[in-house]
Image (cartoon, rainbow, N blue to C red; front, side, top):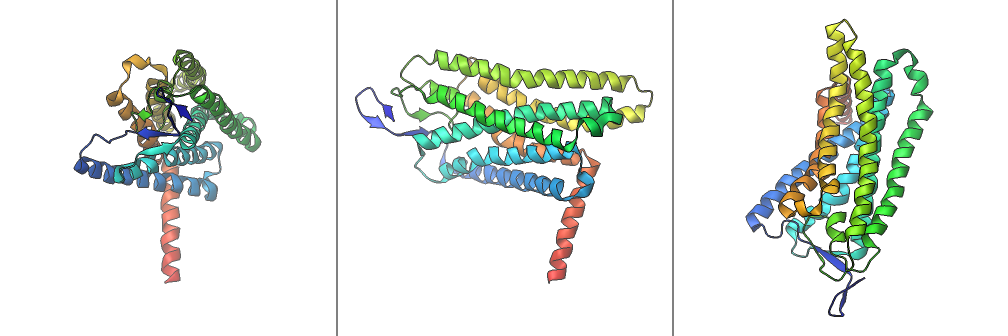
Length: 318
């Protein structure tokens, strides 16, 4: 519950989102975001399906990729359907509990994805720099534990960040200048001094975002050294190709996340927050499967086999 200055109490927030846009613009945005959301769900769903069913993709890299797609599905489903509804209806109100739950899921899934991307970089390092020991180092149990660590740490960390965001009363306003409940914006609406909570979230972002970045940088520095020591240019090109997809995903995700949670709030505003929020809530989850699919021959082959078997099954049923 939020206790306003005049003594009245409210139990909800109002997501401003794209409320200031004209009806025609909102209709265009609805069609665009619905198409992007549908594409993201279809592509990530296909990757989850083929990495779990195709025996030719039975390797740690594709095991991690399947869980990355699962995280992306959870991430976009937490924010985008609500935004689509608010583009159609005039009531943009969300309950206090719904806002808290949404923020927890965004934090939990986002942090889990940060850690998983670091583990994927380590997997590439082992595969390229220690190929003879790869199966022993990256065994099935190790991969399951790494994925479990990413999920567990993300969900536990979400409790801390949710508490720091909602532990104080709210009395300034209940209008959120974004299309979902984003922590730095919500904190500024609290009655007390928001600086301590913002500093805790900033410190947490340093640990959660920069620690995986350090592991990613170290992994790719060693990969680069290993690649440059090889005499075969064709071998270098193939190795670079397997790493390029992961690096592209890392750059997309970390750029938007660092801007949202590691910049001073004085440099922010609705016009700056929304584009970056859209980048890591829908563009990145949509691009991840496309990037991995188009740059990976094994993934493209598995998709062709999956779609081909589906078409054959439909033809036989007819």
